[in-house]
Image (cartoon, rainbow, N blue to C red; front, side):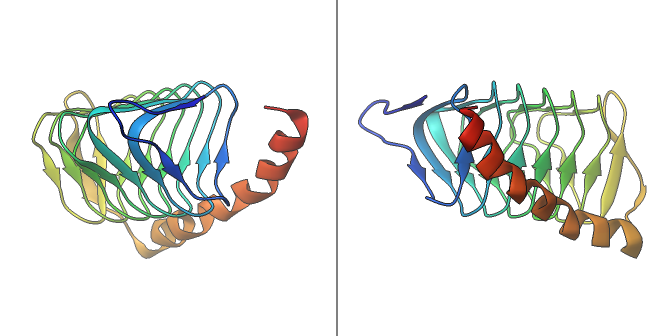
Amino acid sequence: MIKSFDGKDPKISESAFISRTALIIGDVHIGDESGIWPGVVIGADFAPVRIGRLTIIEDNCVVHCGSLMEIGDNVIVGHSVVLHGKKIGNNTLIGSNSTILDNSEIGDYCVISAGSVVSPGMKIPDRSFVVGIPGKIQKEIKAGVMKRLVAGNKSYLPFFEKYKAAGV
């Protein structure tokens, strides 16, 4: 469901996939070839949400913020993630069941492991691998993982038409 709120309409690229069971409300922009899967809620009632190109937000995620949130290009947000941060950089993976808290910023080519919690205001530099509660930087992402992060999202594109045809 795509809904206006407080006079602000979501702006969604024609090439994006939006599941019929997702809720997108208010000042949300979604870029080309991005995918919003079943059960996702993106609420831009307090502040705008900007989602880049080729970004995938998987089933049952909640995206909400108190100030502008920017989610970059080619990002994968895993199942059941809560995003309440400020910035997610390009080519980044947020693992399933992670929580990204207020005003946190995550750089480019980062991996936030499943179940991690990024603390309020935390600034994670480019190429960081983060684990735990609270999240701690464990190491730097190497070239092989960076290639995987760049290549990963294109594998979702064939599913867009299949899901649309199935009425999902």
